[in-house]
Length: 414
Length: 211
Image (tube, rainbow over all chains, first blue to last red; front, top):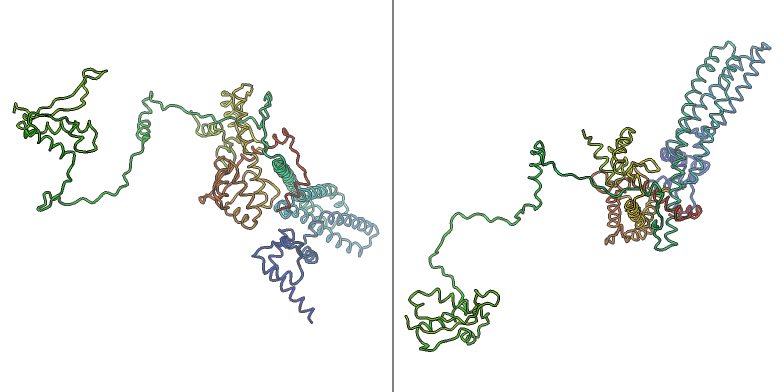
């Protein structure tokens, strides 16, 4: 009972995962990818011992027993060997015709009936197998042998399939349909099979086969080129590893003959001026010129404060304290001293006055500030102060004079 | 009367662009017509240039017609140095992608490369991370980014700038390989022959299976 229970379980599992199993068989070379999506499927197949694998990182493979069963139910085995099958059936058919001819010669009516039935069945099988055989090639083209990961093995399989297609074409060409048709006698159904259905099938199959063969050959050329490139990349990688710092060079070649690939041009800009001499272009040029500003317009990102409704000046009671300037105070004091006549007949040098203040100010600025202050005095006060400039002409520009100091004294003229 | 397609095609060719179905499908289709090839060639011939196809017949490039002039030879040498200087980096990149894709063939024009898919595969195979790191240290792909995502982006962006990849879609993370790869393979074939670089089939197959 336990055995029957297990078998039921296996059949149920096959039914449940039928689609994924068929996909693995028909599209993936009987491999079940080891992915998270397939966890349930893999666990079930492993439980029923229907898959195997070598390493933990390898994809799982369907077991041979399951593959054979799938071959049977999908008829892929029959398709794979369809050319051999067609050959056998064709031989059978020829033999049946010989027997049929013999039976007719002997007027063995019951044998004629039997053979006619067998010939029809055999012929129907031939037609079916011819179709199957050519459809198999379409499958190869559609998959591109993608289920074979190794490029070398893929190339070999492609070569084998091309060979098989070639054999099938040769086989089709060897069919002598008219000769058989002549032996068909008066049976209308048999004649129709031989003269209509079989030639039509053969013709369309040959057409499909020629197309398939052409595609397979193209695929083979592509695969061989892929293999060449793959090997070339591998060779370069190994070369770079074994020859650190390797850099190919053609500096030693005189390039009398330049190989085609080497011959590529340096960038060559095609540029021209806008035609400012043709008035027909004026409008376009004006527009271009208007947009040709090279300095971008500055966009002021600073936020603009909101405008105020009114501004009040001279707010009553508001005062602002101005800081005293020690230089200004010292100069005012100095000038007041001279204007008041406190110095009497004596005079004072501006540079000495600066030294006595202890202020750290440039002498030229000090002198300039004194002159400015004196000029800002009222005429009444200005007349009480006499200024003597200590000056000498400039060496290069004698019209200019260099002031080195000032002498200030009370003026009696006031 | 000027033809916009003629002008664009000739300008692109003279700018050293490799015209293929991926990079400039309109110009490529234009050049597929023999009559257009003739008119482009007639123009180029007047400035000592000609139209050429890569050996895989999937891209057009512009070549010098007469290379006997010393300036032309210097230009050719200069162009070659650009390839030679970066060749090791390109080989490493091709190898990395072959390992990531578990595929026995290098990138071909039209192939799709997804930044996300590459990142996923590298995350699943830490051994490849060191290969990516080494690639990101190469001058042509150099980046200061230490994370795999940043390094992949830097490599793919550099290849896009050099015209080997073209961004597709709006995400900026999906690319298609251009015909410039075909031109590079032609260059590598020449270098392999010229420098006598031999590859061992057995070693090669074994290395390919290592992933």
